[in-house]
Image 1 (cartoon, one colour):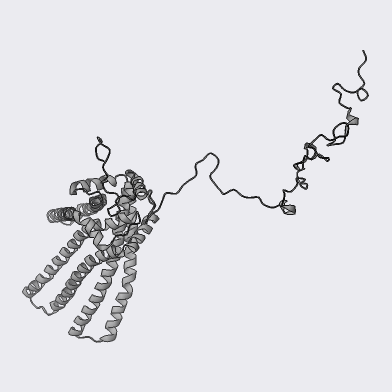
Image 2: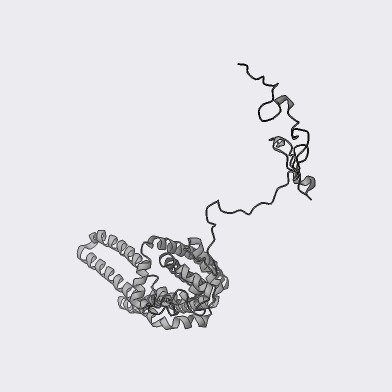
Length: 429
């Protein structure tokens, strides 16, 4: 059986043999079909499949109208950067005021405290300056009297006169201790009051001096109660530790130091732990409008599992402010010494007393100014820690966003109990 002769007999289907193929781009018969151009191009300027551009070679794609020769190599329009395919785009939380409405970082707490004091200088700095100036004046007067009485001890000859002269000195020391306790008491009250401008600054609401005290005035009695409770509790605990140490030293002698020293260190740790657990009580009472007991309990619950973080932030802020205060007071001390040495290089008793009064007044003024700034800053940090813990535990950021959108309660304290009525039949939250 004979096989077909390939190359001489046309294959089935009427197609021409391989050596009789028409040129590339030309159909059999030499005519182009309708809508196609010679050279393997279609009317849109796109080359046919046989004329595809090769890698590394010149482009054969025609330039679009109006582009000319600048089309080749010119960068096309770039799409804006976005998230990877299939992932939602990140949207930063709003920051209407001094902090973003989300759990805070350490730097944001510091920046928010500075911004709060700057925006509410009259209310925060003014209130702190009143308390600090009062305490600085009393401490300055006590210091001058102590120096004068100490100088008078040089003329004492007998034991009876010495005991008589030491009586007023002990009284002044007790007075200085009482003033320190009073400043701590007023500081606890003022810490709660300063939580008002801090909370309002979160939503970029400025607070004046009169408005701050008006908003906090309804909680002054409860602030006095919690401040008095903390002060009395601290005094009783300190007295108990000192009493136990005296009894041990009296009964056991110097060997009791092996017990007294660990007892003292352990007492400091316990005082610090309890103090940080209850430090948010003044802010809770003012913002959430609770009672004394509920405010202490609420502060204890908010600081749960966050003690070390609060301790670290408080320690760093305290050290930072202490260093700044010392740096500011060093030039004042040097200036006071320079003035004393220049004005009276060989002073007598009267000149020494006069110069002591002058230098005490200068140092008291500087101490009051620095103390007011540091106290306002520490109070702002404490209030922002309170807001941060509430955003972490209670979702306060969501409530603040709602207040921001609706503009609810523009003259109140953000974070407090909502005054809006709830749905009928449902309990108030």
